[in-house]
Length: 242
Image (cartoon, rainbow, N blue to C red; front, side):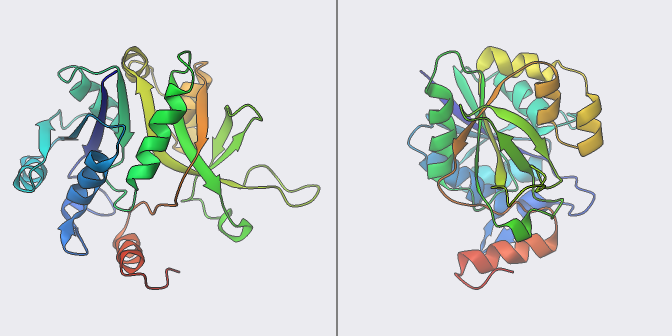
């Protein structure tokens, strides 16, 4: 069973151009993600898939592997699917290039969630979160069935607290896919719910796929802005993170 971790990383970003090369505690962010992916015990090979030679060069300078993909890929899943056509594997783990705090243990956990049943096609992870954070639209929430299936993902607080305080689940944006499933997902057109929430995983749910949700080992901080980068650095330095 070959499991490959692929890190999609594009240079262009409306809010943070050149984000994958931003320094996080002395290392380019994408290099930190590659190191964590390579350190995961379930990962046989770690590859950065990028549209920019500068990102590829930084990864290779650190001893990593990078492949160039189209600058026109509409999403990280499309970039991963393109890279997968030249990188054979049974399972691909999509580790976001803007998650410098994603732990090897979380990467293993998402792979293990998929491997728990041969019938599973897509897996991700989540963890409990404080109610005060649930109103932040930048933090994606997931409602999970008792058997571990994702019922819905949203930027809004779900479930709605009509009777008592619900247990909110923070979704961490890491996925594991069977090889054939990944290519089918990349062929799907955008869906109404995806457009409404700007969450690609809703496209998969609308198309009838089941996403299995495992329990994350640790939290992570996605970097979308320079302010997020500062928070990630404070976390690494064990300073208070607001």
